[in-house]
Length: 154
Image 1 (cartoon, helix red, strand yellow):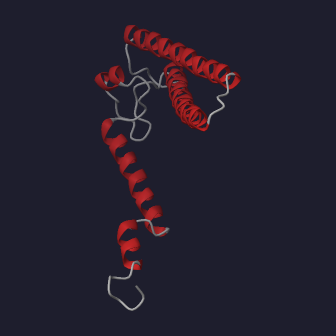
Image 2: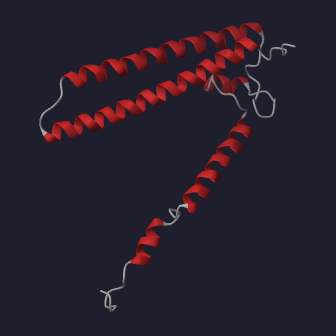
Image 3: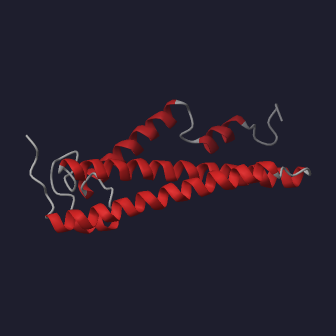
């Protein structure tokens, strides 16, 4: 059974147009980055300084392309939810995401409360992993390994 649409047809159409426009913008931006990278590879710099700058630029462009692709996937998922009539419903709790949130972040799939909980879970898991590999207090660990001045090992 198809769920009852949350948004009225006019609002759904406006949001659909907004999402499709954003998808087109992201696709064009990704192609622009790829085209620039291809052109810059042909003009490979020879000096070490110029190569370092080119490498930094390539890394920035790769990060930008990754960001565009991630946002494009989120927009595509939002368009699929819109087509199924599930757009505007929180994927975690089933509550309304809220029109103001959708206008600000059209591909939002969670209400503010569930989004905050999800972010908190990610931060907690990240802290646990960092603590597990001994990176929780790198400065304190590094200082504990340095012998104080005047000690026999100095």
